[in-house]
Length: 77
Image 1 (cartoon, one colour):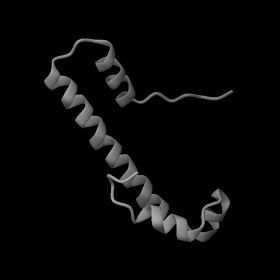
Image 2 (tube, helix red, strand yellow; image 1 turned 180 degrees about the vertical axis):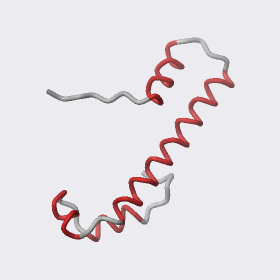
Image 3 (spheres, rainbow, N blue to C red; image 1 turned 135 degrees about the vertical axis):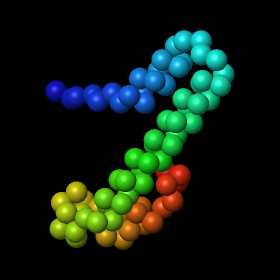
Image 4 (cartoon, rainbow, N blue to C red; image 1 turned 120 degrees about the vertical axis):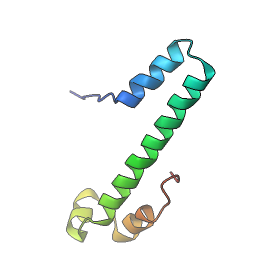
């Protein structure tokens, strides 16, 4: 059975879409979500850059691909 993890960010954005919030509140929520996304992406890339070749091989990612991903800026997808 597949588990679905719902984050606080997803709940906040869903609530913002379903309710009539003031424009400033909606913008603030979306901005906070974007910054949190950037932070997560940065942490994941930092962790990826620290993996050994054996760990990368276990997950099927080459060192070249891992380095290319880790070297991306936090705002890049």
